[in-house]
Length: 496
Image (cartoon, rainbow, N blue to C red; front, side):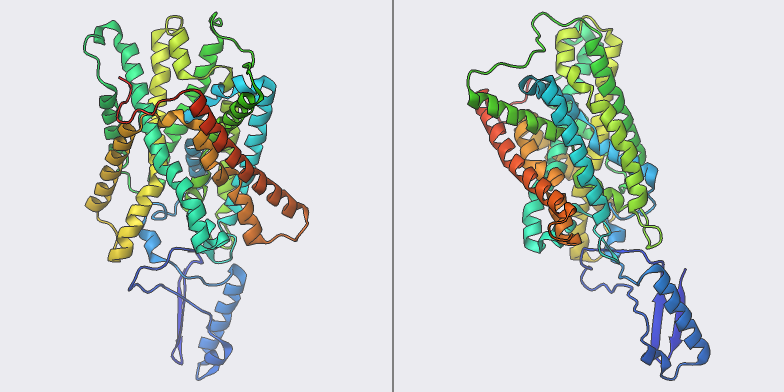
């Protein structure tokens, strides 16, 4: 709905009260801004019909809220270009972002923790991160008339521009760009296993190298990345979430349906010293923390939805997130019983029908391709934000495509240079843990300002400080695990 009133040189423009986003307006651009006409201005020479229109307009504004500025740059960027999202899209994106190959690393955590403490730790982490996700959904529109469309924006609003950037930039960059690199590693190696299973001994005389499989996976990911914005990949996210649910279920079902190999023990690992036990436990907790991902994308997903004061975006977002995390719980908790694909291939490749095993690996490839899209979208958004900020015009199709091709092959280069990246799950889980478990609690305190010494104040301070302490401890445990295992960092030497 749009209304225009002219009288005594005063003008009022009203548009649908879409709430504002934080990034600054590009240089030279004026934003459609409206402010209700003061009574004095309305009365100077204004005709009676115009005054009645102004009074009616004032009542409308009181009903829906107040006018806000619209940032035209948001209409040019891939995250906020389309505002047609809904609860279904939120469920698809959240499921695709929250469930992936990290879940298959959970069996590595249980030898150090044991079954009881492992399940307890997984349960606590699940409900903890579900609470912090709820915080992020609520804080997206915490200030009337504003929308925090990106995690870094919310951190800057809560902690200050410089401190918020310093605290959130590295972990969010890793969770986007680092995840894309890890997905190339996992996806390429899984494609190689799929090829070996399907082809069998026929292909062994001239096998395709691992780097070539990385290139094949990256090329497919770049083709998919040409979809323009976050809403346009809703179907891709649906495929990614569906394949993740399927292969997580198949991996543990196929594993437990087979007899236990004689060389495998399900008993907790014994350690010779207290230090070894402590650091191994910390590393295991880091792997569990690493399994919960996607909080760095929650605000971006919510930004794709229309929002007014009568119909805020947090309602459909939370509805979709609840469905997604119910499905994630159904997949994560059984996986520790034996969900690692490498173990499935190593111990049961001769017991399980080849077609079923190949189908499981193919589902992992589809999921990695889908996850690559949603985790890369914030990087695409940053590239285009820098471009539009300098040029004050949207990216052309060729510029947008060029950014995405460049990013895809840059990720491929990093994958070849750092092939051991996926082996650092414990350390990386510790480094990125505050994004999921700590920062949202501090953001709630800084923005909502709960009453001192109230239950909410104690809860968020306690969880925030505990999450920060865990982050430091898990980083130490991850470093110790790397040293004790004698891991060798072979740069530019991916497995053959």
